[in-house]
Image (cartoon, rainbow, N blue to C red; front, side, top):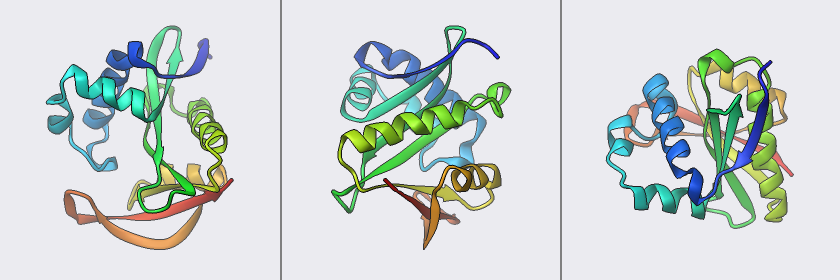
Length: 161
């Protein structure tokens, strides 16, 4: 496998974060609660804000950014954190990068003294569902329409820290 590392993004990494996020939205538009068109419209200040106010983790293989995962405060519960934006370049899937990215977000959440890490997984994204179950997330039974796409639904999962 290529030389792989996962780093927490800072202000200087905003272009890499932007590029990998836009590739994720282009490659898997149904997996996220945003759109490529929407995020292509974000200016540099918005990307700076995103990587400096949330916990963005970038997977790099031989110097190229090939994956990302982001941790944010849990919207409705200050005792938790939320995993969003998880994605790995198709050519690098199945090599453990997802494990490394989620481990980065989990470590951040623990440093934040969070009690749990939650996420939403879109119906039909069976590979993601199997991965999250493998690393210990459990379905909560909560479901909702995907924001901005009422024809699709997603399920909430949670991992106690």
